[in-house]
Amino acid sequence: MFEEFKKKFDEKYVKPFNKDLTGLVCSNVLNTAESLGLFTAVPPSIGLNIKACFVGKKISQDNIILNEVFKNASVKVVPFGVIQIEKGLPLNLDFIVRYSGYENFLLYGFGIKYKFLSLPPIIPIINISAAGFYNILEAKDILKHTSQSVNLIVSIQKIPFVKPYVLVGFDTSELVVDKKVAIVGKNKMDLQTRYEVGINFSFIPVFYFNLGYGYIYNTEGYTLNLGIKF
Image 1 (cartoon, rainbow, N blue to C red):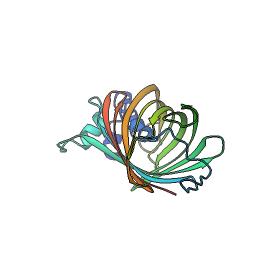
Image 2 (cartoon, rainbow, N blue to C red; image 1 turned 120 degrees about the horizontal axis):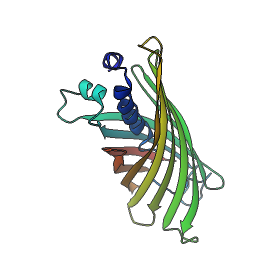
Image 3 (tube, rainbow, N blue to C red; image 1 turned 180 degrees about the vertical axis):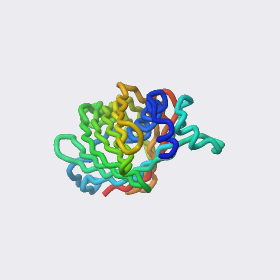
Image 4 (cartoon, helix red, strand yellow; image 1 turned 135 degrees about the vertical axis):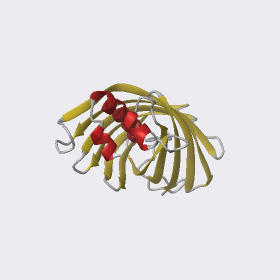
């Protein structure tokens, strides 16, 4: 990928590459609007959630760099995985950290989620939350990618074994390429909108998994989460 990137470092090539990269990093950050809570007695919980998050995003048609990398693939989908840890705090807040590493790539990020509305208030069926995330993706001596996202999520509780959700996200990013790669350069992505829908399945109280679909700016994406709650 990096050799292809070096050969095609030009605005018309890097702009769609940055867009697809941002879509991968910013997708699948939330799958429920429910807050974890600092701790709960029933069911017993310390408000800790650990999950493996996976995204498969179709490559944009104008992304020459990734299309060249995956030219022999029957389905041009870029896979991406992240470990995400979420801890409940007081006042309906959750703190979230994210990490991923593979060969030259290193991703780390954090976010804050706030549940600001539950309907009805006494025994909530619908929860609505907002969350902000900041991510840094680095490839040593090659590039640095920073992204910011704001997300609004609505999820439905009290249905046995399943919890559906819908999400809309707004993402921006900046890609900076190291001087040693080619020429000095950076590319900024203006605000783009992302839509996601999915369902959480939990047949055993502590464990859950999630399947989702997203429309990420101009292409489709697919999500999978495997998680455990403490």
